[in-house]
Length: 247
Image 1 (spheres, rainbow, N blue to C red):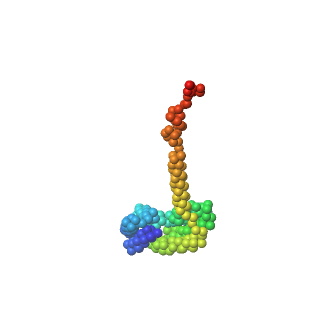
Image 2: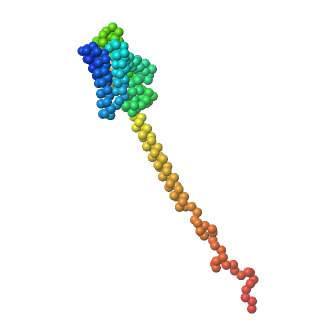
Image 3: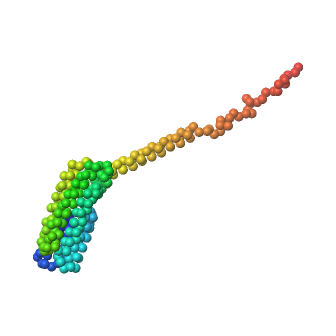
């Protein structure tokens, strides 16, 4: 949000003073680049920062090519309108966009769809809130784009930047705090993996014990294993019958 609000503020402030589209666009691009580099140096998340950079660059180039300062804000306005429609459509279809976004954050992934119906309903309500706020912003800004001037549109975009975002965050918090807690599927997966590892270790120990026991009770090598030895003195055959001392 900051990555788009601050460059927009710089653009409208510079354009209000100088009425120079190119200078205003270059300053907006410069502040965007500085903010993005600062995010990289701090090793912060760059996903939203990259989206902001892309929107500012596209808007600045579009404004310079067309010579209309209002076109600096058009990419962001189209993005806001499309995002608002996406929130409403996904909420109506039962796959709320906010659940898709926050599921990985709360380590529940998509478990809310089938295992946590109360939380799914909360995501649906919160998605409607986001969609309604974004569509309301579009309903205010697009008429100014078509029938107002660039200065009016710029200051209006700045005013409708952070405050509606904070309102949406607040209502989302109010809705989700009353919802059932998320199911930590990551912890469940880790527990299953630990249980499988313990089972495999126990089975390996049982196989090792069985192997050692069979080795101790196996066949004994040597004479005892081949039976009694014949031919010794105690096993010599006696004289044939009828053979004795004759006198």
